[in-house]
Image (tube, rainbow, N blue to C red; front, side, top):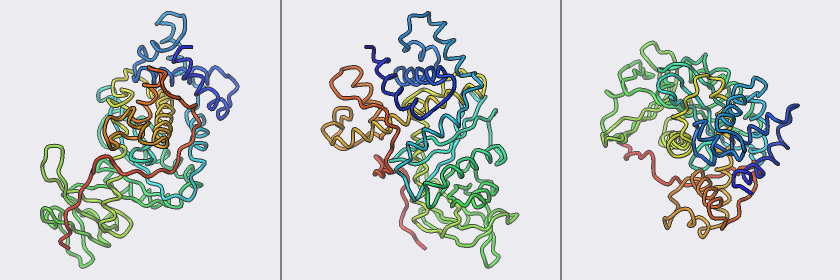
Length: 380
């Protein structure tokens, strides 16, 4: 049996149990595309097609994939919601951290905006939408997606906190979170104006000296005083090694804990890297239609969930199993990378057991492999 057929069989049983459609070919072709994504570690259709064990010409296999990607009867949320409900079935009354972020694909033509749920030190996709063009996006464009996520997460989270970077610094995002019943922690620009309760107003970078923490309660954000909020400020170093201010607005009390919570947002930075250079090479997709990208992301989402599930499996087996795919004495790989590498090594060697896709994830907390945000001693 080919390794692709083995992957198909592992995925087939659970996906057909959870997703019921009149035309079974919709599920069949979906599974084959997931298999191709996992085998090729690529979002390129010809690379995916090359891993499908069919005695047809390459052009025919690519055509099969394209037809599924453009099939209007494949309803992405209806397919994925059933899977997610099973994946999170063991989660109850958790404090959930969801992360909103965007990534450019196909040059500057498309932005993928995704809401992800923190799992371990990474994040699993919950919902996504594709917007044409680059630049900041208005809240109206993503409101429907966020309302859908809010409705879905009601039965899993006793509290939900949305984390977002400065691309979502407009006050409308914070106000929408409050309407949805969520807490928020959103980064704002260092030159943002705040007004204190005593009426004094100034820019954050004028109020906070370098290497100092400051916490401002009950402030009004921006010169127009659009939002009453709290602000936590610290300093870190950027990729160039330069000192950089990090200012977080939140509806909760401003304190050091808010800065630590915001550090969880880096989970999606790493998860987008998994989608791209570290995993499925999403940035090199050449798809030119939002609907087709949407469908492809459905396949990538299942591949990602299984890698997370396999990562949990490897950790539960203990360090002997982890060290088969992680060369370090202590864990240096994320759940996603542990799972992906276990899958690839198992298929390549046949030495190890590859469990089926059960579509179950634990509400797992792991220490990060690296410290992503550090906060200096407070001088407050």
